Structure formats: C-alpha cells, structure tokens
Length: 280
Image 1 (cartoon, rainbow, N blue to C red):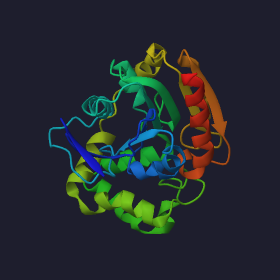
Image 2: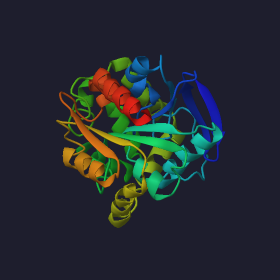
Image 3: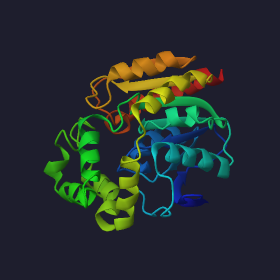
Image 4: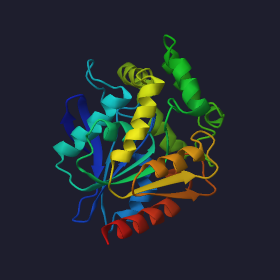
C-alpha cells in the first residue's frame, strides 16, 4: 500500500501503475479498497487502477481530530487526493458511498472526465436503508459504534438485514470482512472517525440539492444498479441517470448493493464497454 498525506491525515491507497487510462475506485462505510479486488484483477492489464481507502471506518490510520469527516468533507478529501497524485481525466467509480453528488455540487470534479455510479446513497437515502439507519442509531449512543461492530465478530450477525445481510447476496469471505472491521474493533480513534462521518449527514434539502447538481456534470456517465437492491432503490439509479446529461443506465441481476462483491466480472465488463465507448 502506498500512502499520501492530506489535510485530514494520511490516506493509504493501491496503485497498479502503468500508462493506461486512470480509473479511481471508491468504497463505502466500514470497508476498504479490497472491495474492488476482483474488479481490479479484471481491469489492471489495460487500466491504471487507483484505489484509496477512505476514512469511513475501514481505514487503519486515524484522521486528525479536527478533520472534517462529513459527507462533503470526505468528498473534498477525494478531490484533494486527485490533486496530490496529479491525476487527470480520471474515470471515478463509486460503490455504496454517494459522495459523487457532493463532489460535483461543490465544484470539485475538474479532474474527473467520466463518472460511474454503482448502487449507492442518493437523494435523501442518507444513511441508506435499514443498515444505514441501524448504524446511525448506534452512532447516537455513547459507545454504540463499539457495541455494534463487536457483535459483527460473530459471522451469523453479519447476515442480518439490519447489518450486512442486504448488502450482498452471498457472504463476503470471512477473512475479507474481518480485515474491514478490524480497525473498528481495535481503535477508538477509528470509531471516532466513523461516528463523525455517520452523524455528519446534512439536512434533506441539501442532499436533494446535491443530486440535482449532477446535471452540471457534462462528461460521459454510467449508472450501474443492482436489480434486486434492498438498500439503494433501483428507482434512484434511474433518476440519477436521467439527471446526468450524458448518463446511461444498466442493471445487474443476481446482486445486492455491493456489485463488486456479488458480480465483479459483469461490472468489469460494463466498465470496459463504457470506457471504450467514452474514449471512441
């Protein structure tokens, strides 16, 4: 893992290198860049894949105590990451986390040439669905984050609808999920960072305003949604695609929210087709 020092703290990232088009892949809450491991394996021969671990609970390096870890703050951190690595004309791909809306609304998408949004938070679905509401309720209680993730040491707890059962149709490998949760099990500072993010969701009007500002993004865009998603409504995906001036929409069957886990090859194939068409 490489690392870069940003205003909020140290961000770790994977960079496959090479001279191919740059694809930056972003994950969601309580996971890390390994969410994309299968997709990266499919793309790395032809693309430079850059995969940061965002400060959303699966990060190993705590952020500074004064860091802005709201949704908008993390979106600005992504823009700063692109600046520091001097990445240009990138294809920005995200799953679960809906920060693309904030990034565009804040006028910080100058280094983004193409946008790919897979099943994620959108409109006022922040925190998303039953798992998001459960995490938000835990974050409001003293020690709630610690208790919530301590319960996830037990694999059966991970398949409940209020935890991770609706995030993937098939269980995430135990060793992968253990690595995602370990920082939250072992570090009070990491739990602090996650709590600040979860409680940093703005008002509904601001969230809806962010979504509307996607109309300002004029580059090629692809919205990929899990057809059977129970956390991120497919209707949200169709609405996002309609807002984007050059947006296209596809659905992937036999998948819940985390398409990179459930259907990585199908997702990678859609990415390849999109990138080939966008650069033609």
